[in-house]
Length: 118
Image (cartoon, rainbow, N blue to C red; front, side, top):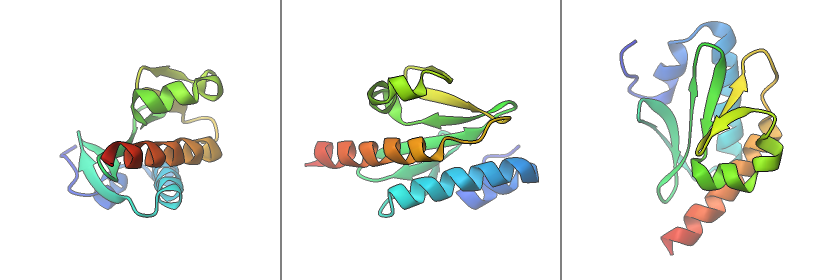
């Protein structure tokens, strides 16, 4: 798949069931960070506000969510039920997305980026 120019193009490149999940992630992030702008960065949908806020992407068996290490660390208890790494978490495709948790993490990242930009 060629690199998408924007998030709409990125999402359109996936099967309909995955598109639904990606749109849910996009909407949740947008509602939690309405001032953030969208772009493609590192080949992934990215929300930007005083720097990269969060990324997300679709894979064969999961939706990856990348709120940087501080976003993972702050919510490590809630995220402990998911596979992940220092700056990422994997939400399995066969389970509902934890959208309320995603919103909390995004709001934390907004505060963090605002604080760092001052």
